Length: 393
Image (cartoon, rainbow, N blue to C red; front, side, top):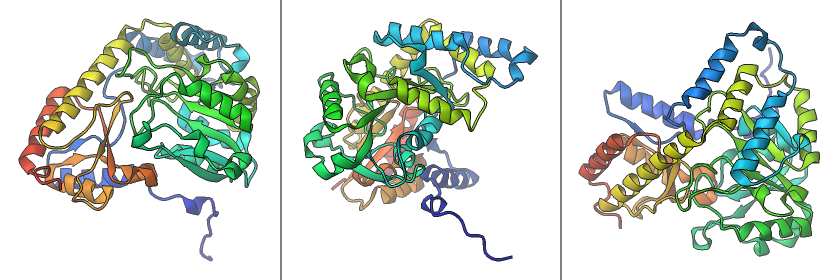
């Protein structure tokens, strides 16, 4: 048999950094080393009891194991209820569709909006899947820089005119993983006017609107006038409701975009598993008590971790939002990967190199707030004892 040749598209993919870090973690554990894994953003909190109960009851009904085919009317009602209550946004049912998590929805949206060879705009640094949305569609991916000196906001006026003429859509996300900042309210009207002026669709990833530390509540892109005319927003239940494994998210906003994605998805699946839909209904219509309590716990972890790291010589700013912390590496390390590997070997602390999020992430690392405060304090003690931050220069 001749050698198997894979597609050019497949040959663009490499083993993800999280798989590499997990291999290193397992190797350390086999050596009997204590590991502090802050690399992957999987919440360590449980879903609210009423959400788990809704899932359990739905799983007991044999009828719920059939093809769903579409979103339950009650689910659409629940999304409408949540957006009105939480963001003050009125949604029509035709402006809502479920997806198997934002990861899946984002991976497929490029095929809805782009032809091969079209161009998309994604932030650098940014979540790796943003780029993948273009690659999956055969589109060209153009990054726009977001830098600390500009508050990690895109400098819209500095994007080259020839890029703006070609770009089909632009992905924006605040609070932004990995840089952990929120956008001021003044940014969104500017973004909407920019999109109208250049005929660019805006796709907003709103995964962390319930995990905000710099103010009481996050915002929806759709709460700003004109947003539905130019784009849509992914709203995930993974992080706010700890349903990461259940895989349910929503694309909401511009009716044409939502309906086209719905048609696309009808060709590749048969709808979200009904017990997951019932769990989502319970989450979206239930009390906000659990969300607020969880936000406060993340906020406290953020303060303890960042404050503790500053106390031992690592100048790490408090996050404004998300379940992560973004930090510059010490100056005596050449790359974020070399720092991560040295940190892991010397202390057992596993963080994600910023270069995994784009060229603009080099010389930074991301840490996930996924361990409780006593573990954070123990970890800071281990880092302090290692002496790794005694001579940052």
